[in-house]
Length: 185
Image 1: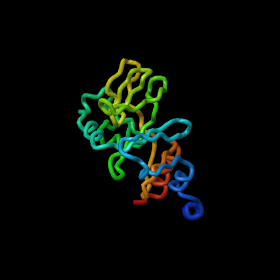
Image 2: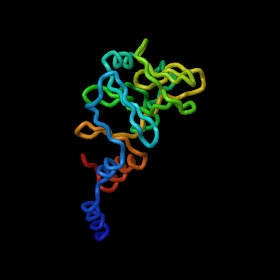
Image 3: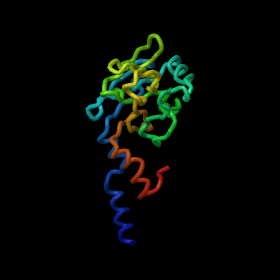
Image 4: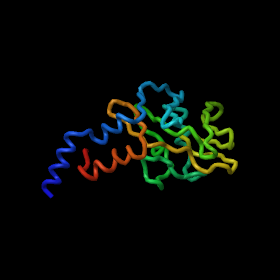
């Protein structure tokens, strides 16, 4: 038992941590480059991901929506439990103001959602006629799609970089390292 613990300890000092491995392989984006109200698309695992720093108008609109009025009341955030509610806080990250990170594809046939700041700061999927609020929660549907736009696994570094993760990297970052070595907090 003692030998096993020593080998694990030695292995940890010689190899990169899960945090370092995730940062080396994942998509990375400097959040300081975002202009409020102007979405940026990042290619991640051959899928587009939208990153948007909200304007005060977009934030006010998103915060004014009652979760009970949503067609999909779940956050659809890979960073949270599957039953987490679609609150504003569960759909955004805070890095010098609220930022939305979400897949660009709606759940009906994978069409790309487009943004319109007129008239109501909403996202649309033209193929399925779905409409989403500024943080990607489903507002209107014609019945072809059902879910809000998903939020991919991600982390934000201390220096303000968004890192998009694979499911395996998320497990390493949040699970295995903490399980074996305990919390780094």
